[in-house]
Amino acid sequence: MDPLAEKTVKDFRKKFSDLQHNRENVSAPLLSDNELIILALALTEDEVSNSRLQNMVEIHPSDLTKLLKRMCKDDLLIGSGFGRGTTYRINRDFSGSIDMSGSYDACNSDQDNVISMIKACCGHQWLSAEEIALKIGRPVKEIRTVIGNMVKDGVLNTEAADENDSLLRYKLQEVPNKVPSKVPSKVPSKVPSKSEEKILKLLFANPSMTRQDLMEQTNLSDGGVKKILNRLKKLGWLERIGSDKTGHWVVTYKFE
Image 1 (tube, rainbow, N blue to C red):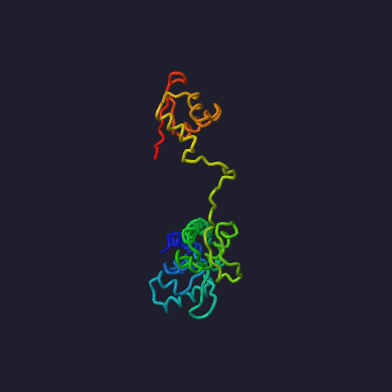
Image 2 (cartoon, rainbow, N blue to C red):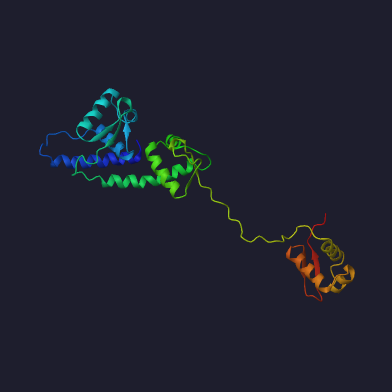
């Protein structure tokens, strides 16, 4: 049994036990465990059917049908439909002296788990409400309600704008990757230009060359040589060891 339903059974057992002590006819029997299980499932799943309950109670299907009819007669349940298609929901007016608020709170807290399971199912595929309900083992009616709220909150996308819910499929809203609003117009190249490569080779052959020497060898201005040297150092292809007067260059670029 669902952990939530087990907790609700325990709550119901105590509540009906308390009610029994307040009855005028104290000899009247308390609700059986089967009846408590049926009421708990009807509350946590909104509605139940004979086939659903057959896996939860240990009585013959025909006896289960009789029990459900008796619970309807006692105003514990309200039946809808006919024959095998009959569903049952809890009669929330069957006794004003029974406070079921704790069970309602449990249902509300359980909704977070349902939402998490729906997100997991719809993360990478389109699924209908019926398919989701089957995967996570929850009633379709409950899933439709939760899905509706998730669509309104922008958590789920719908595949088709059809008014017939049975044709709608759902998928988790994809969060777009953040793209920088400003993309640099010039991205530094990882291949040196001809002038850069020439300076690198000159400094590799003679690490003691000055900017003046480079100007003479490359026919570049002092500003041009300075700009290239700064770029090469920034790229990690060139290092200056020591002072401008007594230091030397170390070329770290790997020539092809």
